[in-house]
Amino acid sequence: MKYKEDKILNEVLEYIKTTYSKHYSTTKEGFQVQDILRHLDIDKDFSLSNAIKYLMRYGKKDGRNKMDLYKAIHYIVLLINSEENGSTLMEPNMEKIQQTIKELSVTKWKRKQKNLY
Image 1 (tube, rainbow, N blue to C red):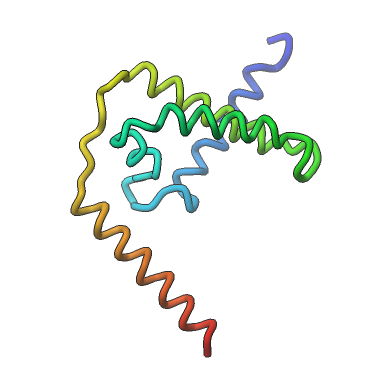
Image 2 (image 1 turned 30 degrees about the horizontal axis):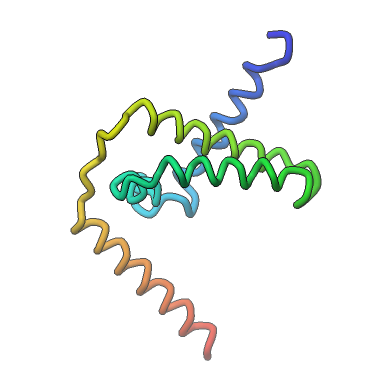
């Protein structure tokens, strides 16, 4: 491709894949905050706002940081997915959500206790 779009899109895809193993995912199954936002039907606004945020930040934080553009593209992809899926919302597993929140709270409390002593 003339402008190396295929190479760039592959780099974006690799970045997106890493988000599922980083702090963005809260469970082994890949549950993310985006899933809660979809259930609340606010995911489109959230994705659009974050895409704009990262585009506006580009060139201001850490220079011309390519990661800001990758993040903006990721939110645009999430927005496209939300638009394509319309009002079909994923049914959340509330028991799993509550368990995850509890585990995260306990982990945070333990870290705080370690730093106190």
